[in-house]
Length: 257
Image (cartoon, rainbow, N blue to C red; front, top):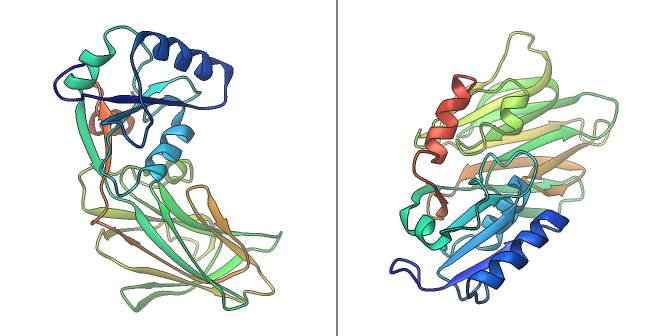
């Protein structure tokens, strides 16, 4: 084994291509359980990468993804050769998750972490009505929209970008607050906030206009209030090949490359 990483583990998505790649790599490289390994190699798409980062959140364990999925924005190119050399030459990207706290209309509280974004979204044909507070100060007394999204820099090229939110460099100390199909105020297109900000979203007419809250792939329904803030005490470590770091990929996205 190479000096930097003495032990390695493989995980894969359920797709046949990812499972076959995992079998090939296990035949070529000695592996142990992901919990015990120094580094985890994730084979699949961005969905698997997010699941793996969530699985090892708070451990500091580095995750090296190889694309056997569809988009693969967070992943490296799949190549089975010289894997150990690639791991030890890889660049580290460190991101921090959002912590979402919610209360539903029954008064029950829920908590979840998001690596890409926290968003609230209408559950029915009726638009949501939302009050938006930043650090305890009301900034929008009433937003009428399909929903509202808070994105990290790492997640700014995902759902946030698809609803015309800004792309944020990975090391930018910012969060993107982006409306989803806003109706009123008509000219409000969102805001850039310091990453230390606490965003609180109160659902107006919560029972008449039900809203769900989502942290990446964790959803809670019939929400009355949501708060989101960055947890900068928790590191998420991703490894990328030289010249293909997450910083570089985000920069390329800004120029449409």
